[in-house]
Structures are given as structure tokens and as C-alpha cells.
Amino acid sequence: MIWRTHMCGEPRKELVGEKLILSGWAARRRDHGGLIFVDLRDRTGITQLVINPELATQAAELAHQIRNEFVLRAEGTLVARSDETVNATMPTGEVELQVANLEIVSRSTPLPFQLDEENVDETLRLRYRWLDLRRDKLQRNIGLRAQMVGIIRREMEAAGFLDIQTPILFKPTPEGARDFIVPSRLQKGRFFALPQSPQILKQLTMVAGFDRYYQIAICFRDEDLRADRVQEITQLDVEMSFPDEELLFELMERMYARIWRECLGSEIATPFPRMTFEEADSRFGSDKPDTRYELELEDATEATRGSQFGVFAGAEAVRFLRIPQELSRGDLAKLEELAKEWGAKGLAYLVYDEEGEVRSPIAKFLSEDELARFRGDPASTVLFAADTWETTSRVLGVLRQHLARQLGLVDDETFTFLWVTDFPMFKRDEEAGHWGAVHHPFTRPTTEWEGSFHDDPKRALAHTYDLIVNGNELGGGSFRIHEPELQAKVFDLLGLSAEEQRAKFGFLLDALAMGAPPHGGIALGIDRMTMVLAGEPNLRDVIAFPKNQAGVDPMSGAPSDVTQEQLLELGIQLHEPQA
Ligand code: ASP
Image (cartoon, rainbow, N blue to C red; front, side, top):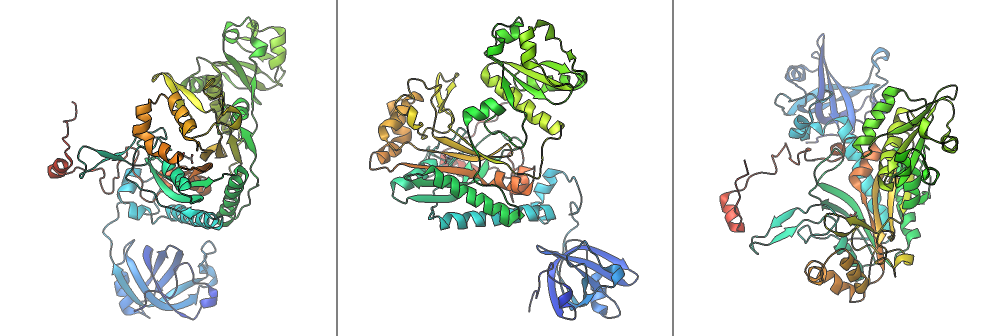
């Protein structure tokens, strides 16, 4: 028994007259004055079946039973469609299969939603994910993802990287999220943590002499879910000994260029431009700037030190954005609301009308010099943020993105890649009263900060790099600390006592003390990459079986209850949830 001679997307004119066997799903059935038409679908496309009761009596009888999503096997002769019935929008639209024998291989209960239905509730889609995944868009997204991962593997192998698997049951690895913990039955009362990334383990593969490591790794981060977050992220994880930044960047650029070429048929420009964090922050108010458009931030802190306008004179930083449009009061009110959401106290502005006349509640407080400094073109607006440097970045960075969309400056057809380098090494954690690592605690300082980072942690820079495309962070990495003394010094600064260092990272410190080569690496999010590649705004739609936004899988019901017996074995007692 042969299931098929061809896939449903394959039949073409050249095959007319041949006997074909096709198997697939009934996407649609239409009855037309005796003739029955069925669109037969598989992963590769659709072929139209025609069942003529005069030529195939049995098949026609059976065909009346066909409902959407039944699985069928059809044997017949490929025929050309008449000119009037050719469907130019279908790759197989010039032909149809004249069915001789038909078999219903498998039936379907009534469907909870039709595959071509728009706006189906996401919970319902996730509940019946196997059906949802049959839709064109999801077939394409998941297919694209697989194609991309294939290219990644080929590029990494060609460059001499070894695919090494690391454990899922491990110890906490700090990436700044909460750990998922797993109780151990054999070691009652003790817990594994699921890795937030294989960071320490990949470093250990370098200490172990493997020289170049990669893995398509799953990382578990127990984060509160937002639209663009999931708790299981997949990343291309990479590490190399005796690291060479140029080699690493080139490898990544080559890989992306190939992914774009093979998956989308488009060329991206390499090498990718590079920019330090400091430059990105001051020009774009962001560590992941969208450089498809200009709208750059300007700094007026110096120019306003002696301002009569107290809000400017007293602020740590005064920065502004020039918008090439005379914004209305309504626009400004909305922008102010957005600015406040991101931490601004208000939004000062100067609006220039067609004649170049200024309209602004603050103009009267500004000196001639100040007004000259900010002077905009006719029909333009200047928007200010006066606050801490960080807040001005955050607020103007968001307004910049928002306005670029509103003004139609964003070209969705282009992809602008960018490396952002030299991030700050530490960030003050006011609550904890010590410094925290901006990247992770194993990141080394830049060469110039090696001897002095502990004297001025606020300004110290780390040897780090992030890869950005169109304002999305694809991932990032760093050169690592391979000297145990240096690592201990960083741990000290992060507020880890000597005992804590031993308990949490003793094994890493021991390894670093036994001949650790200099090393560095990167990790790039596969989910995010697929979203960009597929132009898919919904993160869950580039993942075959995602959880919903509450971290629940509506299909299987996970997470689910366990029996009292299982809990007992683990030595765990559940508290009643607080009322
Ligand atoms: N482990 C880091 C992360 O998961 C990346 C790296 O430093 O290689 O973000």
C-alpha cells in the first residue's frame, strides 16, 4: 500500500495524464451539480480533487461524508483544468486530480474553530494547538524556525564549534530572573534549579579544553509574563577559548546573512555597524536603538544651567527631540501621558507653526540664547525631558520610537543590524545596598578598567556586546573572567561574602584556578530571531507548544496537581493558599 506518490503542493501541468496518489487533510469540500470538489492539503500545499459520480460511483458516495479536516487518500489521474477554471493564485491551480479511488483514512469530530477563521480566541487556539498549528501562518513560522536552526547548526559546525549538551537539572545560574526549582526525591529537602542559561557550564567546557562550544539551549526563567516574554526561551549559546571578537562578530554576521538569504531571499549588509553603549544611549536614549530612522536626542544640559526655568536649571540632565511636525494639543497631551508612564514628571515643549511662531507655556521663561539653541524649523516641535540622565534616556527613547511610527518613518521592509558594545559593568541595587551585574557576574571589565573597576563601579565598563536588529535585542555576550582572584573581587563588589562565594560558585572558582583559558561567548534568542524573520508580532506564534500569558498550557493543563503520595516522597507539604 502506497500512501502517496506526491505531496499535495507538487502536481503541475507536466504531470498531466499520470496516475497520482495523494494523502492529506480535507481543507474544503464543495458540491457542484453532481461533481464534488475537495481541497486536499498537506504541509506543502493544496491540490484540488474532483470526484465525478459517473466515473467513480463509490468514491462519490464516500465523498458526501467528508467534513473539514478528515484525512483522505485519493488515487486518480491528473488532468488539466479548463481555461475558465484555472486558479492563478494556487501553485497547483492549473491541474486537478480526477479521483478513481477514495479512502477516508481518519475522521474528525466537529472542529472547535475553522482553520481559516480570523481572530480566534488565543486560549481556544492553544487548547487545540494541533489544529491551530495546521494553519498556514503557523506552518510557515515553525518551518522558518526549523530552517533557521538548520543553518545555524551548519555554520557553527563549519566554524569548528562542538555541540555539547549541558544538564537541565542544575544549580542556580544568575541571569537576573527567578529560578524554577525542582525537588529531589533522593536528596530529600534539596532542590535543583533549572538553568537560566548554561553560562557557567559553557565556561567549564572551555576550562575542559573543548575550545569552541555551541548548543541550541533551553533556558528557564521564572519571570512575570509580558507580551514579549516566555518562561522557556531557546537560545543559540556559544563560547570560545582564546576569544577573538572580530572572529565572533564575523561568524554571527555570516550566519545572519545566510539565514536572511536562504529563508527570505534577501541580502543584509555586513559587517554590521558598531556603537558603544554610551553613544547609543546619548544619541537614541536606548541600549537597543532602532537605527532605521534618525530622530536623534540632543543634549541641552550645559545650555540650561543658568536657565530662568527652574525645571531645566535644577535637573541633572536636560535633553530634547526635534520632531518634524507641528504637533497638536491633543498629540502633546497623549505624548505627555506616555512620558509619564515611563517616569517623566511632565513634558515641556516648543511648537513652531507654519510661520515659525513659537507656541509654548515655557517659552516665556527661556532666554534669547536658549530659544536660539532650540529654535526649530517652521512646522516642527521640540520635546524636552528634564530629569536624571537615565530617566531622560528612557522617556525620550520611548517617545522617539512612538513618534517614528506615528510619523511613518519606520520602513518595515528593511533590517538594520547593529552591535552595541561596552556596557556599564555594574548597576546600583539600592534595595540590596550593593552593586549588581548589568550582564552577569562572570563578565570581565574592559582592559582599561581591569585594575580600577572596584574604585569606580558606577563608571566601569564591561567587555560586552549586544546584537540589535530594528530596535530588538537578539542577544548578547561578553568576554569572561578567567582569573579566580579577579572573579572573587567582582563577587566581593556584588556583595557576596567569602562563604556565599564558596557555596554558590566554589566549583567555578576551583575550575578557574586549574588552568582556565581566556574565553568569551554570546547567546542569541531563537524565539526573538524567528519573530523578526517571520515578521510575527506574537512571540507564542513562533513556538510550537507555548504556555499562555498566565504560564499555563491550556492544552495539557500543566502545571497540574500531584498526588499526596508524590509530595510525601519528596518531603513536601503544601500550605493552603492564603484567603
Ligand atoms: N548567558 C548569557 C545570556 O543568557 C549570554 C552570554 O553571556 O553568553 O544572556
